[in-house]
Length: 278
Length: 278
Image (cartoon, rainbow over all chains, first blue to last red; front, side, top):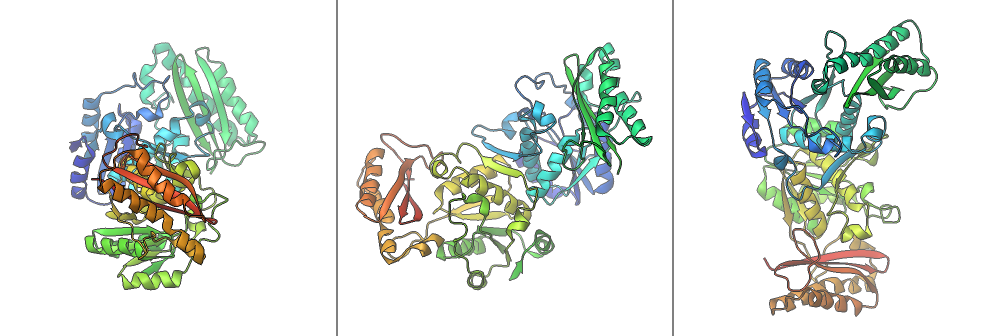
C-alpha cells in the first residue's frame, strides 16, 4: 500500500495503478461505514485509492474542525487490512495553498436541509471533491448514504460538470443498537451515546408505519419528531420527508421518500436518514 | 477528422486518440488566432481535439450571444486544414440540461477589470472550461493571450482545482494593420473597423515609451487613453496597467506589466492588451 502526501507524488504513482480505479474520499478516523465503501470499491475495481483529509472548508468557524478525531496509524492499518492500493494524505497547505480562490458550488441543492443550517458546508464539500476527482481521476467513486444530501449534491455535481466518474452510494452501516456509524459518535459520553439511539429509533418507527401503509408526509415526520422529543438529552434541529432525488420537501401523500433529521445530543450534532419506498 | 455532438459520442472516441492530447476550446467563427492555437497544439501533442461552443453562460442578457457570428462549415474546413483529429460541437441543451445548477468560480480574479464590467462572465467561462476539461481530459490545453484575464483566471482555476492539464497561453495574432484578431471584428462597419485601430495604436505607443525607459504606470495608461480618445468613434471603457500574474493595478514605477483596455467602437466592445517587460 503506497502512502503519499503531495499531488506530485500522486501523479507519479497513478500510472502504476490498474484500471478501473475505485476511489474512496474520507476525512479519516475510519469506521466500518468507511470500510464498507473500500470493500465495495475493491469488488468493483482492479485498484483502490483512498484519501484522508479533514477538509477545513466544509466546517464553519464555530464547528468541530479542531476537535475532529484523528488516528492516521489506525486508519492505515485498517486500509491495509482491506487491501487498498494507495492512500493520499494531503495537508491543508497542499490542498489550499496561498492565493487559493476557486470554488465549486451546486447552487440549489446546497442551500436546503443541511445547507440551511450549514450554509458554507456543501460548497466546501464540492470544491474538495472536485479537487480530489481531478487529482486522482478515478473511474468510480464511493460515498455513504449516511450523508444523504452530500450523496445527492455530489451526484448532481458529477453530472453537471461532465465528470466521467461513476458515483456509487453505499448503504448506512449501523452499530448493533441501530446508531448510524459516524466518526462524531466518539464525542458522545455514555449517557449521550444511549440518547443517540433516538435518531434511528424514530426512523425505524417511521419505516414500520410506512410498511403498514402510512403515506402522509406530516405523519411520517411527526413519528420521528415525537420519538426524538421523548429523549431528554436530544434536541431536534429538523426532520424532513423529501423527494429522494430533488430533496424537495414532500406534502400530503408520498410514494417514495427520504426521511432525514439532524439532532443535537449535548454539543454533538448527529444526522441520520432512511429511504422508504422504491 | 471526427465530428461529434454528445458527451457519450466523445467518450466513445477518446480512447482512439493518441496521447499526449492537446485541446483547444473555442466559440467558433475561427480566425487565425484560433488556428495558431491549433497549430501549437498540433506541434506539442500526438492528437488535437477542438470544441466549438458559443457558451451562453458567459454572456450577460444584454450582450451579443444571439448575434455572435457562426459558420460551422467554414470552421470545420479550417480545422481539417490544420489536421485536428476531433471536433466536439455540443448544443446548449447538452451542456446545460434541465436542472443544471453547478458553477465553478475563481472568486477574486473574476471580479476585477473585465469582471467589474461583466460580473457573471468569468463564472460562465470557468464553469464551461471545467466541463470541457472533465469531458475531454486532455494533457494540454491552449488559450489565447488576446483574452488576457481569461488566461490568468483559467490558469488559476487549473491550479486551484488540481487539474493535471498543462495550460499554454499563445500570443495575440494581429491583422496587418495591428488590430487583434477577434470574431467580434465582423460586427464593425468600414469606418468602425478603421477606428478599431486605436486600441493597438495606443498599446504600441505605450510599448515604444516603455522601450525608451518610461516606467510610470499612470503615464503608460495615459498614452493609451489619449490615443483612444483621439478617435471619435471610440469610447474608452477602461485602461489598466496591472501586474501580469495577479492583475492588481500597479501604481508608480512598474517593472513588467500588462496593459489592457476595453473600448466600445459603435456598439461593438473590443479588448486588447500588451505585455511589457519580462
